[in-house]
Length: 459
Ligand SMILES: *Cc1c(COP(=O)(O)O)cnc(C)c1O
Image 1 (cartoon, rainbow, N blue to C red):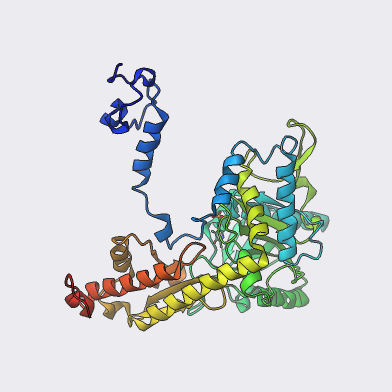
Image 2: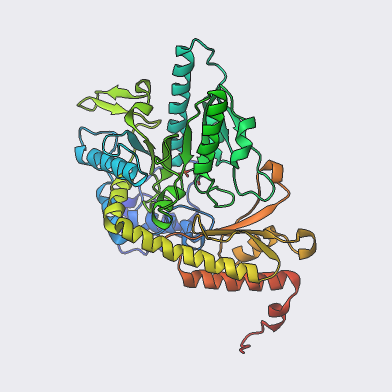
């Protein structure tokens, strides 16, 4: 049989993958190959290339799911062909999406959890766009009803994730970002009064600030807006970006009032693929009650059969993530989510203690009270003898991804480091990381461990 042809059909099936013609040259990067190749060979070669990516279980920079039970893998596989937009062909997938919406509405204490509106999205970014659009439409309706101009909408927020900057730019809304005060981990309520006015479509409060991992005080933010309303008559709704906190606070801190228990909270988004533990590609946006979602934003589509309402930026999307989200909600229940995140929080807190004890660091967030995470900065950057960027690089040599980055512009001189603990990151892995941080600091400062780190040296 022919061995040296690029036409997969005539290759000897016993040929070793790495002796195939396709393995004898670099993979095509600019043009589609003329011929077929064996699936095993292509899979092996692509896998080899993917092995150069970082190891997801050592990526402590991401909030996103990197570990799932085998049952989730099975369900994802079975759902490969399910298009969630096609609610006529896949009515049960649509049912499951709707159940997730109502379960989350209930988890976040909607007064009308069983009837309120909401939908799945590709993530919190799309969810933020939809939440922002609803705010913009409602503000415009209000302004038009009052016979007032509605051409200069603004949105007020603290140090937000980039999705809100995108929303503002893509949908022509002025983003009024309240600067981070010194020592603050997010928006402080007393700052609001200066920024809101009659053109404010809403305030975004963040449950789990991307930079620091802390929660913004949603209850106090709404209380300040109550005072502002009493003084000025401005009735400004709040959207809570609970991308990460939406799946943490209900379990770790059920007494924290941040959700639809606050009448001013109009909508909430969360990333199912972050602490919701679903595979990548699903987020949620939920309105407090159905009338808060303007009807004009809902399209009716009939070309898939039936007459389907849709509110989304995308059309076709995979159904598997939604099914996996439902699986997680049923599989773990509140008890399971609580147990997983109590463990994650203890792991984060233990790392916080270790980092605090090392000497050069000051914790910005110690893992208590908000996300299972820790963030820190150098106490005295000038005297430390190294930067957090140096430390990031040293840790990277051991495979750890621990990002260093500056705070938002007004506090850019402060560089911080952040570690997120999520499902699948064990206490042991973090103990190993702590040891690697010590070793790296000693290396960078010429400290004790460095001198003692001879092969075979034991205490
Ligand atoms: C991650 C994150 C987002 C964006 O969410 P995606 O699901 O990645 O699109 C928005 N806001 C906050 C606070 C986040 O942490």
